[in-house]
Length: 408
Image (cartoon, rainbow, N blue to C red; front, side, top):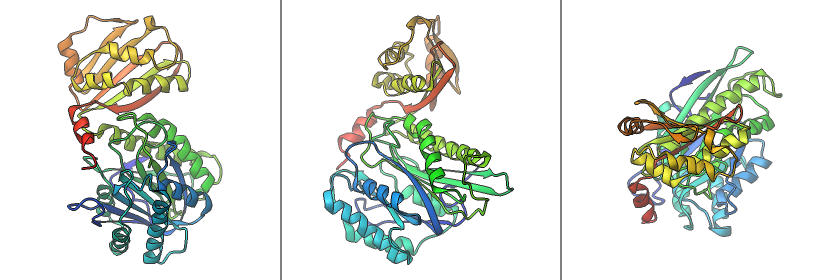
């Protein structure tokens, strides 16, 4: 596998575009489009929040019922969530506008929205935006980057990733992705919008299986604020343009493809966690030597979602008691007198706790280790062979500032 630059336009046959439709913002792009020149099979995973936005309900139906997807239309600024029948109707109107502008058949377009909950989309602006997007489609790497920028809300940077994966028949398939996610991020499916493209020829059921599997160890393992969004969507489009021997069973090529998908999803997940609203650091937690994978995930997620621990990371304070406490209320059982806690970064490594009690560490050295853009905490539970990793961020003053007036 080779990591390459770019995002959704890197696989063969995919184009992207961006435009300013004035949906909510007046000084920036707020719509994006991804289009495949040939039909795609699609897979998707969506929020588990009982309150599901109209685009989530719309996309679930299209992905389940259609074997031919060509395009995705995304808007930022308004989430089209809690908007009733009118909101769902606007999903249909957006898709129809795209299919008309692109000369596509019915039920070949997915839609996605992000932004403020409860507001109706200004549908005429959206339709005008769709027409503009259709005329700006381009296969360049820059077009992919600009599309990633257009779907940002409180994100401070665009998020994209791409890899090349060699297969056994001598062909190489490419996987590219773009995403947005900064707030309302909590591990319960995909807490964000993520769009993944690939030129791999793969059976639809296997594409869904690969995505569902990958989500468990990537997007389900991130948290910024403990809030699971109403709009969480992760979609993969596969158009077969690589002309590989079609993957129709769980063989070595399927594993290679899934490994590539896992890399892309993990990279995007870490970028979202590190770009959490107001964040100054990516906080990574590894729970090791656990009895099983589920237990390891429980420990790791409990620590990254602890507000007290997140605040300590912001303050570069080696307050390990908060970490041990978070492990204790996780719901999984362990012997507190056996746990080791280590923190590390590019500034060094230091063992804070050995067998449940503090070591004779230097507070100054610990502060140095914690003063980095990425801090890793290793919790050695000493009761098995399994491990898991979760990603979050520090909790800062700016998080409250951003969310206190988000609708303004």
